[in-house]
Structure formats: structure tokens, C-alpha cells
Image (cartoon, rainbow, N blue to C red; front, side, top):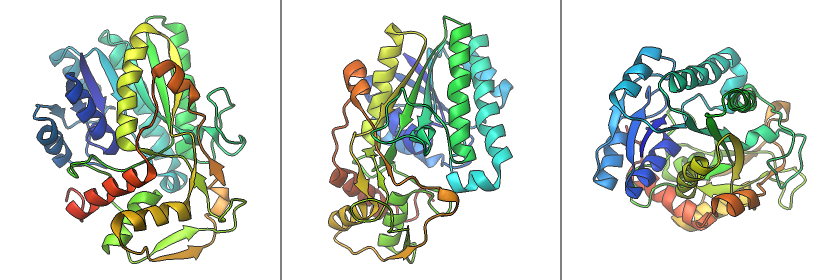
Length: 338
């Protein structure tokens, strides 16, 4: 099968490309390199020993998409492309709505015009907002607490409507929880362009000395140690979930939604301790106030039973595995791909 990965030079996209190539699938990547690096494409080829066809374009470019679909016999699309920083989305919301929603609509339109009817969509656990209590189940009402989250909520609804109007079109919306780790080779991993927006890369950059100190946003939450609890999943487990999603979609058309998580939570302090164990170093951190506007829900973790039952998906790698692999990536690439 020939699969187009939108945003395939990014963190989750690059790991998914490796998993697909190792399975024997053909991979085509489109990425505008706004928050990724072309070096990731070279590393994907180095890990797998296989060639990747790469287009440096934006998914909002209809002519570029037409060219890709014309030059390649694409059978399915995995869609990771989009802006993803929660805090930034509150500062420039229109950019997020235009990029994430308009870009996805453009991609779906070009898929349909070119006879491609299978899409795996990168959704997020943030669609559960602050109105649901864990474990998060796919049947819960969706909402959001920031513009980035609302783009995911809106796009899931748009895709439901497309599938309802076109019985030949299928979408698998995968609600990721918190990806951590890197490929065991240390050749690809998470490489934020600027200040990291999530905890693990901030910890590793602090451990290696790139950041002076890690700020823990609040230690007064109603949890055992006072810090927020999240469901962390190894990025390679997450990548492998996309292969199972495509296999499922072939036999089960229409719109489907699945959580991809470990089904259990770990606190911020717990992650700090795990990274200290993996690195043999102490994390320099300070306790700061909670982030403004109740940006962080105290506890979020998945009910992962639907994915296990229907996809055969179960996360295999432990918290320590995630931290060891993330640390290996950071030490081999102290400045990321740059």
C-alpha cells in the first residue's frame, strides 16, 4: 500500500513512517518543515534502508496536492500536519483555525477529487476538555479549553459529516494522549523549534543543560503529590497504532474514533523521577503557579479498552523505556536536528 503522510517529517509522523516502511508499505511525505526538519527524512531512510518520496509543501497548496496524487498511487492518508502549541493557540487563534481547519478541508477535498477515501486523523485527548472525569471514554461529550483543542473538536465533527455524506469515505480519528520517547536508534525524536510546549522535552533539555530550570506549573492539584497526572505513551507504540488503524479501516468503513494511550496516569513529579533514573542526573526544577485560565486539568488518562478490543492495540513500552529512549535521543542530538 502507498500511504501519504502529511506532516511526516515531524515527531509522530517520522516514527510512523519508520513503522510503515518496516512493514513493507510505500511512504510518501508532505511537510512544509514549519516545525520539523528535512534531516528527519534522511534519518528515516537511514533507519529503514528504504527510500522516502518527499514533497516540501503545505497541505493548503491545492496544486501541490494535485501533483502528489497524480505522481503517486496513494491509497490512504495519515494526517499529522498542523499547528499544535496550546499556549500559542490562545495568542494567535485565527492562525490555528486557518491552518488546522482550512488545511484539513483542503486535504480532504483533494483526496476526494483524486479518488482517495481512507484517512487516519491525528486527534487529541484535549477534546475531552475539563468536563469529563477519567478514565476518558470515546463516547464522552467533547469540548475544549483552548483554540488548538477546538480545532480538533471541530475537525472531528467535519469528518463525521463528510463520512455521513459520502459512504465511500472513511476516517479513523485517533485521540492521542501524551507521546514520549524516541526511536531506539536515537536518530529521530522530538525536536521542538523553540521552547518546548510539553513536559518531556523540557525535562531532557534541562537535564542536558540547554534549559536552566524546569518550572512545574503548580503542586496544589487534588492528586497524590499535588501535580497533574497524564497518560504517557511511547511514540513507537503510538506509531504502531496507526498501522492497526489502517488495517481496521479497510474492513470497517465510515467514521471511527479511538483513544491511544496506556490507560494509566503518571504525575509530573513521577516523570521527573523517571527521567532522573534514566539519565543518572538530577532535574533542576522550581515550583511555579498554575498556568492561567485553568489550562491544565488535574487528571487525564485513557480508557484504552476499545482500541485493544477492536484494533488489537496495547501499549507495550514502560515509562522508564520512554524516558531512556528520549534521553538517548537528546544526548545524541543535543541541539536536535540542527
